[in-house]
Length: 479
Image (cartoon, rainbow, N blue to C red; front, side, top):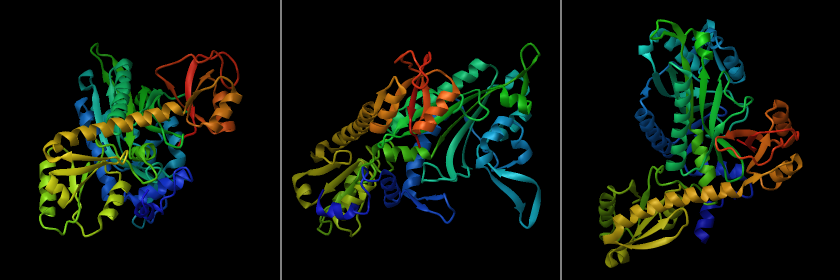
């Protein structure tokens, strides 16, 4: 690292020294967020919001392609409405924020600032669903929610966060299950194809499932420090909420039936995953498909005649190939280099008088910091190839890291030792008993992340109690 680069990143803690502090340094110095005056709340700055916009827009497109419509539900939920589904309210009770006054008057009934919107959708569905002809209802909303967390960290766990939540109603259990898995696969595709984050797909245990759900399915990703992050969930509700809210329809035989429901959500915490999967000691590393700016043009010796004009012409030419910006400020090129490395911009394009004379530019890729000299007549095709290569390289690098930090253990002693020495995912058998799941968490800090769809029989005994087991589970310490 050059002297100038060291000077620029000296305030960023090294990842291997203190990963938590590195993360905090990066989210602030890369201009993703600022802290607000309310504990645990964050201001998402333009660069951070542009990143969320890219993710949101791509996910919204795919949600609509699967036949869903966007709606919007109210911010406030009456206490009596929240109380209608017993398991649901018990699951969220510790996290809800209450509104007790309107102006100077005390409310006759407290209001909840929505932690999630199941009960709002259920109330609405009970009013608009009457016949089998009204089904399915495929709704989605983009919104903010509030959960009063005790420990917070930007993007990963905040009092207020942004997300989408899909809520659907179906005539049969089979249709609802198909919907649940279909949307989980959409989330997995966003992570792997857009964010270059490999995921493990599977079902949550009874202990870890969503409050009020019949079954919860998840995608789990592994961070650089060996901890897991739940990156998206999809829930099959069965008829539990429908029975609590009286959501019934008349079937083709004229009989009353309860609808079968689903719910699924994807949040701004995925930005935290992107940071922790791809980032390095120089700051962010953003996959091209997610990057607000894919190419930053930095003119060299821009005070010399023709350099800025040439750079702006390049921007215009390349805008059909990539999302391109130019830094024509009076800051020194070295400062600009380090600034855009900190922000994780996939490609830096350098061009100065000598490059113009030689009809070439210099491309610097963020993932490897490799410099490539490209003739102008090949620039558009080479740039497209380079962005695709960076996207693939980041995914493959993350996949290799996950594989290196995934272990198989058979005994509890082996489980403990592996978690201590290697961290990461541990594949181990489980008997299905809650007592074993709780013992593992109590003694090691690891939780069951999911029972993967792709099951392996790594042993025939539970890693905790040694009794017969036929479920293979991914375990890990997690955010």
